Length: 206
Image 1 (cartoon, rainbow, N blue to C red):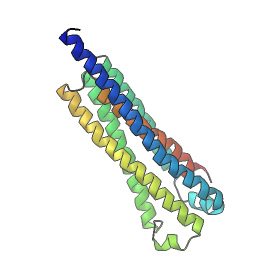
Image 2: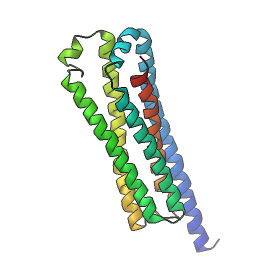
Image 3: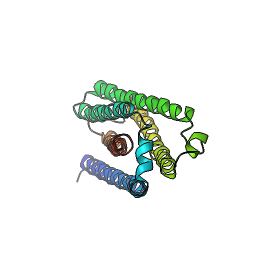
Image 4: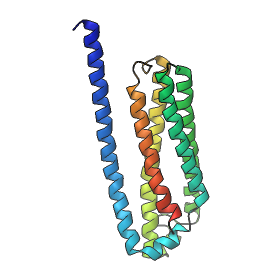
């Protein structure tokens, strides 16, 4: 095996290992949120009436808009990977930028949603919430924990995508080496997938 072939083989092994590492990381994330979903299911079964009352406090339209925003962002992220595979670097940068912008829209909507709830005292320890039933208190506790944890993942994704834009501009990610962008895409699709479960659990089921 000559030197160029050895380098290429080493690169392929690194790419393979990076993908395996990302899948393992995603698996741990699924375990984390899976545990929270189980907790939600148990409390939902135990305090069905309270959960039903509390869920009516959320704005379904806002949740739906955020769902559309995240689904669109997953599309632009996938398109950015296809673009770099075709050697269309500027298009890939633009699509990653669009993904980041959509993530920002999601966070802005979430900020206003949370602010409205805080204004009405519907937050852990809030006077208004403490006067509600145990089911309603547990509902909003889970709501803030689960959507808050998801929001942290969105922020992390925005940081990752900013790095990806820099890597694309500097050539560290290109049509011959794009595993970093692929792994970033996998992470972002997970963020989207988790929201697909959170949306009906908190906004649609009454």
